[in-house]
Length: 410
Image (cartoon, rainbow, N blue to C red; front, side):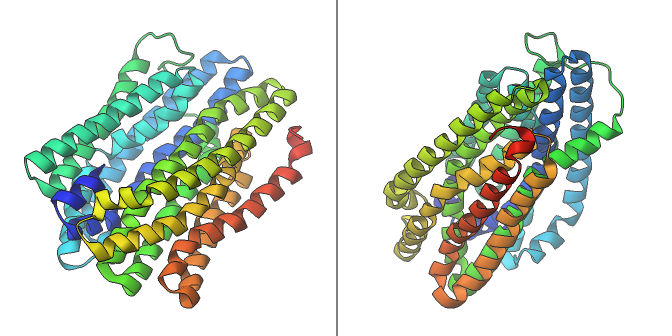
């Protein structure tokens, strides 16, 4: 929600700065997502094999790794953030705003990483509703504090950053308290030690999710460079609106993929091929129907949502609406690719999952965003995602067919 309040109460330049620095924050936060998804595949499989104590030891070790890694990343971010912002294309007032926002939010990075890790483990622990409650509590905290700090206290970009940092602290602290005590879930903290092989397999299994976030951030930087060249600050602001809304829609696909992954891992570990077939068939059906619904919904909401963010500028509003409508058709396909990558992560095949994510999020999008604008101008940037999703779908289908007999889901 930072973007909404910043765009309306702080102005276009701070909003553009927020969009420029956002990819860096997502890259660092994605490390927690890697540990969560990769570790969940191992822990859920261990539970499926009937090794409860080992599962808790692995779980506890991975949380410790996340905390230590988060602290290191926070310290490094405080030092190198200005130089990184310059590499992202920031200068002048935008650079100052990037550093201001980034340094405040970076202070809560360990908690943001923990929040991402625990969202996967809540499903493995058979407490998905609690995970949802934590996410909602964190989001509501951000919304309320954004309104208070930015709209009421007029703290501008700094207020938005502080609201985000506090909300991430809530999202990371509540699960720590829950798993630190006796609870009714399948997981809890216990005495542990360093399991090098488990950590290595976690990173390999979760590398696709990390690659997806890193690649998306790199591609966002490319988008911003192209938009600055073709449309200036307005282009970055328009893309920021589209990216915020598309993230919400894509998060629905991602949430289902992450939520169903521990179930896939459990049945894979328990040797239930019929359940894998059933899960895959139903999941692909849901991805197709969800894609149609989200495309229609985004087309309908393109004008009113754009007006909420940038209605104060007629030219920026028109650019955002047109870009949003073109961008919307990518939702028809992206669910299949998101689920396909998560499905192979759940099967402990991090390599295939990483290849799908790497091609989809980095290679295909980078090529499309660099080439299409040469022929189509600004519309080529908005069409880049649809073209990359189409290419990715061919790769995803190919891997699903090729590995069907190996994992017995076909």
